[in-house]
Amino acid sequence: MSMLAESSLYDFVFIYYSRNQAYLRVRAILHMMNDPAQLIEHGLGPYVLEEYQHARKAVGSLSDEHPYVQAYENPDPFLTFFARVGSDLPMLYGTYLVLTEPSSISVAQFSIMQRSASVLSSSITEIISSASTFRDRCHSIKELYRAEISVGVMKDGAVAYPDPIHEEMGGMAIEVRNLHFSYPEAATTTPTLHDINFSIKPGQLVVIVGANGSGKSTILKLLTRVYDPDAASGPDSILVDERPISEYRLGDLRRATSMLNQDHELYPLSLRENIGLGYVEKHNDLALIQRAIELGGASHCIEKLKDGMETKMDEESYSDKWDLPAEEEHPLNVELAGLPTAPTLSGGEKQRIVASRTFMRFMSGKTRLVAVDEPTSAFDAAGEQALFDNLLSMREGKTMIVVTHRFGTLTRQADFIICMKDGTIKERGSHNELMKLDGEYANLYNIQARAFVDDEKKER
Picture 1 (spheres, helix red, strand yellow):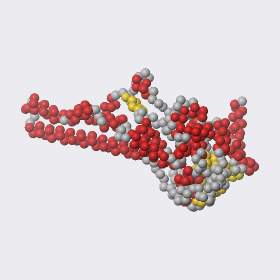
Picture 2 (spheres, rainbow, N blue to C red; picture 1 turned 180 degrees about the horizontal axis):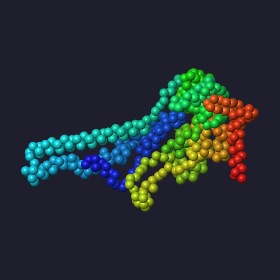
Picture 3 (cartoon, one colour; picture 1 turned 45 degrees about the vertical axis):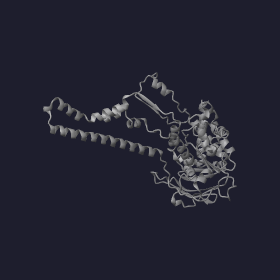
Picture 4 (cartoon, rainbow, N blue to C red; picture 1 turned 180 degrees about the vertical axis):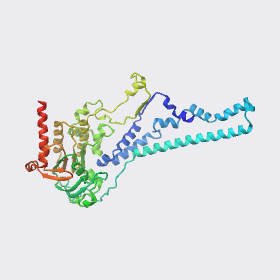
């Protein structure tokens, strides 16, 4: 009977949602923790932890359990009473027989029935208690896994970055020597990168091109210490400002690096905060945020939203329904439809907002390396050109490395190009030099040029 009482919630038509802003803030921050790599790249760990503690404190003693869990832990008093009486039914039946038909049951039988009823009642109570405890533990484990941030084992250095000797240099100097790397989970015996060597001077613009799977993005991940090289590479395989990269403090390196790639997601926060977090210390500075929006090309997509910069991108809306009828005019359907929802943004619009966050990061004045990995995959040609023009306009004092599959103005402006194939550097040089070689780079360039011409002919 107790089990039936616990499942009674499903006998009703209902919806649930939360309007408690502190609780919604807690959920948003927990959702951000689902992508720890992005938080680590942007150095947002301390900010996220502090915001979580503030929001958690604001929630106070309010239960934040799922409505189903709350219903089971706080059942209807009438149903609880009925369930407890139900477990004593054998005793009630025995008493009825003693009073109405004394000859049908002996004293011994009644005594056995009494003891059996007591054992049954205790057993039911123990089962329900165990089930509740088991459910609570499962729920706690689920919450633990949801909130946990797994941090990989990566050696932290002790040297501050930038050091006083190189602080006035216009960007980060990088030298790569005999670099080898394979992803730990790789199913192939072929290394992702093999015998990589190149040198970048402070302030240079370097473009890395190559076919998919050639290792372009992996180079950026190693230069920004998302991963460390294989042990076979040796401690001096990556030098930053003439010192092994592993000797620098990770936090300092990440503060000096701005990453922009197509994998970066929007946080379930307001657009203002999404962009402002590029420069945490100034994340509420509206003038800086507005400037970053303009540079990222996101002005139009934000202006068309009813709440503008205050639009929340909470894609994990905390609401649900049970057994609602299909009629749209049903009161609960009407209320559910009236709840606030996150706007639907196109891939290009999201990339513009992420780019705006990167420009906000530039405004900290700490960026010495800009690592760009296919940030305009959803842009049209004009939007892509505008973004790269803005990136190049803020290049002073920064080394810039761009991974791209599109050949155009950027490759012509690069100090040099690295052309990758099958995890190795196939060619390097300027655009004109590589075209004269008539090798891998020229082949990729010509394929793209022919495709562009064919598309123009089709449009005509």
